[in-house]
Each structure stands twice: as C-alpha cells, then as structure tokens.
Image 1 (tube, rainbow, N blue to C red):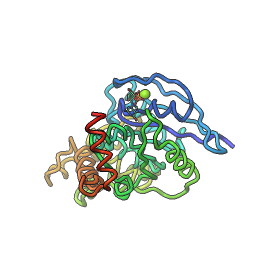
Image 2: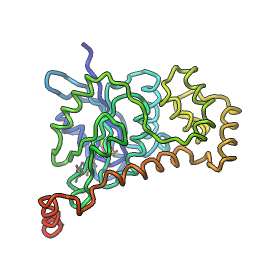
Image 3: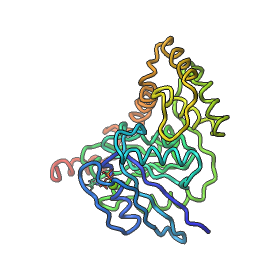
Image 4: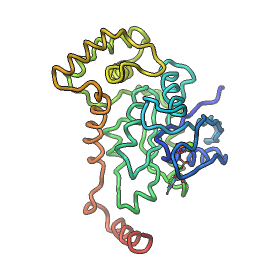
Length: 287
Ligand SMILES: Nc1nc2c(ncn2[C@@H]2O[C@H](COP(=O)(O)OP(=O)(O)OP(=O)(O)O)[C@@H](O)[C@H]2O)c(=O)[nH]1
Ligand SMILES: [Mg+2]
C-alpha cells in the first residue's frame, strides 16, 4: 500500500519544522526568525504500524503570496484542491500565544475537505503568559478533526498528536466548513460558488471559500478564475449592502474567529486550584 502523506502548514515561525523534526527524527534547521524553511522537505515518521510521509512547508500568513516561499504554499493549496498530491491529513501548527492571527490560515485549509489537526504549539510559552485554551471548546466551533495542545520544543503532547493522526488517517468522515457567512454575502457570491462547483466539481465549502477569495482578490493563485463580469456583479452587489469586497475574506474569517477564540479561553477564576498555583509558581520563579 502506498504511504499516507501528512502536510505541515502554518504561519512563519510557528514551530512547523520543530514538529517535523520531532515526528521524523530528522534535523532540519529551526530558528527564531520567519522564513527559515524555503522549500518543502519530506521525511518519514513511524506511527505504530504505519510509515507515513511528512511534508514540511514554508510558513505563510495567507494564500495571497508575497514571496517565492509563500507561493509554494498557495500553489500546494491549489494542487490539493484539484486532487493532485492531496495529503491524507494536514497538521496546522499554530502559535498558541497568537491564536487568532494563526487560525486565519488554518480556517482556509479547513475548507479543503481534508482532515485538519490543529497543533496548538508553544503551550509552554502560553502557560507562562497565563493563556489557557479549552481545546475541546475551540474545536466545537472550529470544526477541525482535532485540536491538540503541544510543545514541539519540549516534546509535550506528541503522543496525543500521533494518536490523533492515526485516527485521522483512518477517518472517512465528511468535513464541512463552519465559517459563518451572512446570508446576503452568500447570495452575492452564489453564482461564483456555482461556477466553481460546475467547473471543477468542488464541494459546497471549497467552492464558497474560493468564491469569497476570488471576489476579494479578483484572482486566486493556481486556479482558473470565472470571468470578470461575474466577479464585478458580486462586488457591486456586496458594496450595495455595505460589504467592502476588497477585504471580504479577511473580514468574514476574522469576524468568525473573533467570536470563537474568546469562547475557548478559560478565565483565570475558573481554573483548578492546582493550575492556579502552577501559574503563580511559573510567574514568580520562572518569569
Ligand atoms: N518555547 C517554544 N519554542 C518553540 C516551540 N516550537 C518551536 N519553537 C521555537 O520557535 C522558533 C521557530 O521554530 P521553527 O520550527 O523554525 O518554525 P517554522 O514554523 O518551521 O518557521 P518557518 O520555517 O520560518 O516558517 C524556533 O526558535 C523554535 O525553537 C515550542 O513549542 N515552544
Ligand atoms: Mg520551518
């Protein structure tokens, strides 16, 4: 049987390569500045009985590329959407101390219909900053395959991540995006969503995601786009209801994340006594 493939994606400097090294036993360069990984790197990991191919990708904040290494990621997004080299699972590595910003890219990958495991990385730093995330509550809203707190640097949560990965690789459940899109916006982009569905045979979520992106940017990296008249009609319909098309994708995704990220924060008074003591100790002596 062919190897299964797992792709690691995320913002620059979120710890993707650190996790890749933990999973594969390789020693790719890890460093504390963005843009360290500039090509994709492949390694193998042993997950119980299975050998899995792991792909480490350059970091990016968005799918609108501003550099060569960012273009690699947006090109892969397009390839995977079109069914080329589609990974069996995506691990989205996020910096837990900067959750909302990091989940923006995650949310775009959630629309592909591939199981996504969100690795809440840098939990060691989050603890020091008294950031507590209820990962189960977060995932009820996010709709990923799972959300697993880890620290790639200190090898925390890696067993949980691996066992979730094994489950994801066996999973056949259908994944639907939970992104909140107001009805008038849905109506405005519906003809474009339909175009993506008939043209490429895409599922609803992916077609909607691309319709939103193409209406925002007028062009989506790696895909043929619908004709400009169709896009122009959607844009003027949006502006007539007060939605600026130029920022549509970011506005919708950040609005959604603004609702769901605070809902997953555990307020300090709700934490257990031992957690609170832990925090005091961390503050006082570990700084
Ligand atoms: N404290 C802490 N630091 C981490 C953790 N994971 C990674 N780092 C550090 O974060 C920095 C970035 O790690 P990389 O693995 O190079 O990040 P990357 O996402 O591959 O970065 P790019 O390839 O540039 O996109 C390094 O200094 C790592 O040591 C973690 O769990 N905790
Ligand atoms: Mg890297």
